[in-house]
Image 1 (spheres, chains in turn green, blue):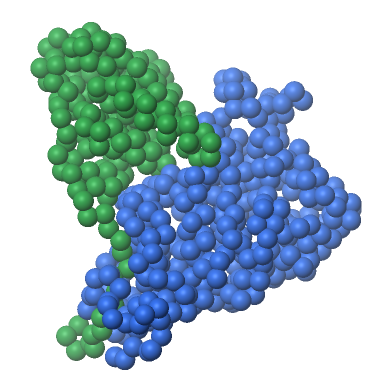
Image 2 (cartoon, chains in turn brown, red):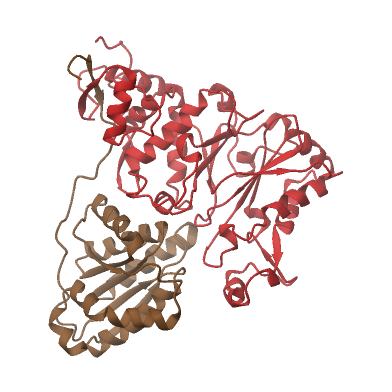
Length: 189
Length: 363
């Protein structure tokens, strides 16, 4: 390299320089809080997991568990989704957003989770193993590498419902830990 | 290195440096530079033109836009896509400065609210934004629309398509295995799909004009892949369209999935068959209708457990058939290709974009 003539070029990349490395606030005590699940139209297994976790959160003292189902993100439906997401985030104290289980699903799960985290909510994005690193990379490149991420096994959607329920139950203490609700693990157990 | 006396910093001359990109010292020799750039993650593996300040300024002067204009914030990174960043990447790709207005129109179209560029850049699918070009700009930029227009014909327009792909990589941050989960990918992710319409041989109005934009324009469409459709048995336009429709009705097409909210089909018809079809069906809406009708499968073809979801998606009609796309308007028809006839070209939609987007090319 030392004998090679050098020139200057302009760097072609654009970067989002901001990065929030903090995971954001812990959930702490779930008592009296409204937990919001983001669902989607793709993954029935995520519906099942959310259902199991919702019961666990209620047992742990959550005042209410609410669900929002994301649909198409373009055109007039996309505009409606944007507004619904905004309203949903306003209405909850804790965000559990999934499911990052395909490329575009991961993109939108992280997009929506970042909106909740940017509002200061305790937020967890949920991904399956195959999309864990994509989710992390997207969050980092969008400027929030600290976003909390909970990882479920992959494949998930292809499993029978009973298996999914079992996995969901096994993950209750783990998701509570990811959320920063460690105090309540005993109550759930 | 002398800088030509052109509009390199703005209309008042070069009193300040408007190029804000970091200057980086690199080897000057092309292959050495390509290795460096590829290692840095800037390239696609093919040789790159070093984007020196002089080349970038010349590109901008020819393109006629100010470098600090922000065209969009491209997902997934959300960083600003300025005219300067477009120019740097276009220079690396080997694109001419006069392509800048088309590149900008394409980027703006991709950022329309009807187009899910964020999802598309992350997806496991091999989808990419195909760009169909209408109007005089086709000839100015040598956008191919005759023989071998989807690949194979030698044209500098390849570099324009490649410029858009490098913009996705370097500005949007679409990096395979990192922010893009593409399972297989596609050759279209190297130089893109950039094809003109052979308007002069079409019996119908130009595609962009039918979509409300006359003259030079781009239509951006979420293409999954390309599918050649061959037929040498049809004896009239209706029969040829039947073959096209039936060939597109693949059960594995995204749009047949009840979990996919939208979906489209793009069909390129060769000029020989276009003339035959046009004599039978002078209204392009009838062509769309016929392709749409045949691009369907009986409900029995699908697992019974999917029936409820399919019904919910609105694609199961009273005739007991599941339609690949919801309505004939979701079938995009254009004329291009060589005069050998015999073939049509189909492109299934990715299915998460509400509709294709058409934008005027200004400049």
